Image (cartoon, rainbow, N blue to C red; front, side, top):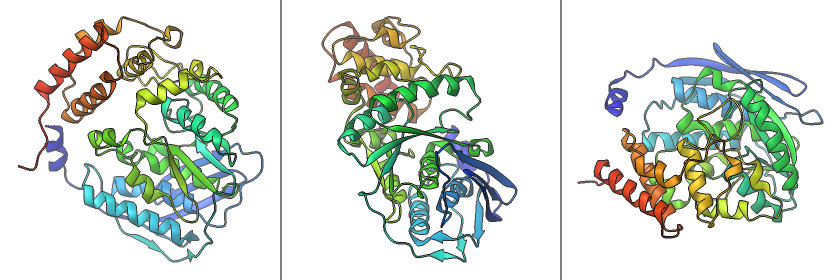
Length: 377
């Protein structure tokens, strides 16, 4: 029903807006017509901007969400413009809901030299499973020197109690994985944009903001290849990543060939005890920790169980998993049901026989009975 309502919703009236930037030290104010937001970094040395690619990536999230044609005379690299056009083409091809790719007009295009992975790099570090696993994997690359924590991604700003609680956990993860942590804050989420499909533009903006100090960036993949298909359309996948990576500022997509359970097993088996600092919960935004009963926490607990043990100290509540899964009712949304079904299938193959696996088998059966199969005919 929601998809039908979205289809019937009239397309927002096309706007035309000028993209402008005002920079003071490590603070940039970005405006796109009547919409404005900031990005601010605590990097130790001031960041110089020869081009304003970072502003384009942030403005693009607003443009595609609100049907805004962008005009600007800011210096923007040809590489970033090509990335923006590739992303627009993907959105036009996939036709996700509430997405309105609009024209982009540039009058100051800069031909920039390609960067190199021989230069220092930084990666987005959120404290969750995906980015923590990516940080462990990236320990083998001495050029990856910094982690980037974003206030304005999972948490709306740096003043929320949840972010204040999260930050020291991420600082500890960074220290244990040999990364120096930079924190960047942006207010872009207050303007509203299609988070599901465009949240990686926020990551690309924050990474590119630091391109004066670093030659490349990275963010963690959410899913294995099979799970990317099940979660489609979703804004973090290898196709969208390839659009956002450019010759001027390459971006790596870390951990994309691993299942969530495999990532968790590596994390909890690491001698640094980095698992004790994980933050995966989205149900309780006030403490930056893990409630233990939301679906994301439950999935993480199941992933931990694939190692043959549990970590009760990581969660506020530790109700029996077989009871939770035995009583769980499928969500109403078809996309959510299909995503849940794929997650459970991927998990069950790594679980030992027993009451938890039996409960998951029962849940899978309930999900399948309520999920519409895919097919062209």
